[in-house]
Amino acid sequence: MKVKYSDFVLITRSATLPKSTDDGPRIYATVCRLLEKTQVGRRPLRLLGIALSQLATDDSEMQLSLFNPDREDRKEKGLHGAIDAVHEKFGDRGLRPGTLIEKRKTRPGLSKSK
Image (cartoon, rainbow, N blue to C red):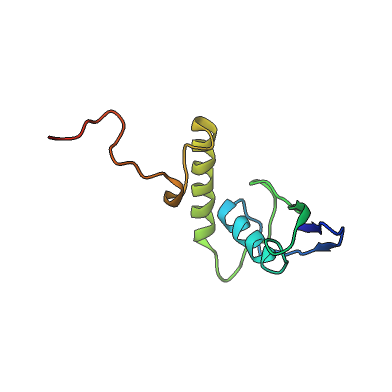
């Protein structure tokens, strides 16, 4: 991550995850932890840049664990594949965390009972 403040002071922060991921919330949480190590929000900014590197595809080779095979990784990949499919079919608003959904008094198409 690069942060350039309004006075042109540039700082960088980085993190390396223990294994490759396509988990958006995990990447977002990592970026938030990096932001906490800066003065973003307390000092005027000129530039904020986030970069990801050493990305891998699903069919890339990786060392398998001999003693502790991780079945959760396969479940996670299936989950992320399903999430990606929903996003492709319905767009960015097709699937969101519940905290981002606006509350409505009545559901569309339904009238209030009298």
